[in-house]
Image 1 (cartoon, rainbow, N blue to C red):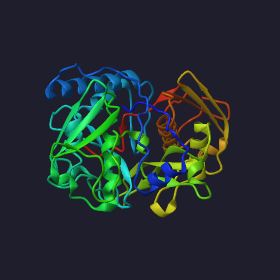
Image 2: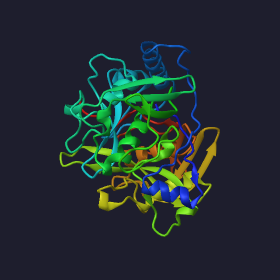
Image 3: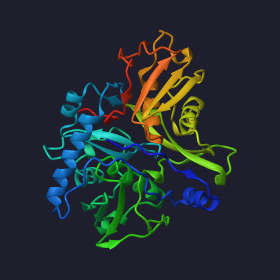
Image 4: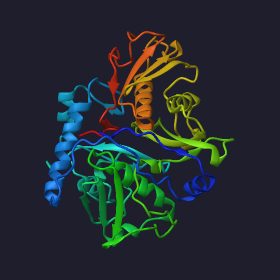
Length: 370
């Protein structure tokens, strides 16, 4: 389960210009600690600790169900059963966007950080599981090892084959690595080595790696038209895409919007405004929807939506609700979202799920068939 962080505001023109040209929002992003791997652990112990903490996080954080074609959740107990032998990794879709995919059939191996990266290698064990049109982000033949220290920094040790990538995919590859590994509660930051040496800069498009990366790097970066780079805030919003085989999935997009301190409002504005249609993305939230009220309180965000969120059948589309929850928990430090429609929590969703109580972020995202 991903820990929630505030996406940092971009305030310096030079920093943002570098970000858009290949440099990144390199940051440390506070995340809630669950447990530390024991000091002096060997690799096997660290892997076991990662799996234990990962499972504990799932059981502790999943309180209410979320379901949709792309999001799988039923209860804390069944979530744990669903995620046994399942790993969420990031891959590239047919439009070149980086998206999370939950893969199944991990051959009874613990869902460790190392295994997750092995599942990101082209021609690797997960190749046949990727949806049609998706490709793995790590070059074929890449070997990987991972160690995690007590500061929750994962050092990824790649073989030289990892450098056999196209320059256009350089940032996408680093985004995928960072977002995959920081899904683990015991990992906050990621440092990269190749052939035993620290990698301070990617060799082709020159993406700097002079500090460990995390989700403040952003993903699938966009800038809102008419906004100056030096006066922006970064928010990450989940839109939807669909393959030719009718596989629906969520795509996180980090947008640079006009500088603001009201992150939840900016997130909702971008969801309602809609996605970049040139990339095949759509927003499941109706453009007629208005936000009647946003109220944060002690890790809970209450979102009161107008009746325009409802579809022709008078129900709130499950995909829209999921996109709202994913986006708000990604871009803010809230852990729960209370949804309301026209001041009422007793509304009906299209998948007939109850949202009368606060819900948390799902842990199985864009699941493939087992």
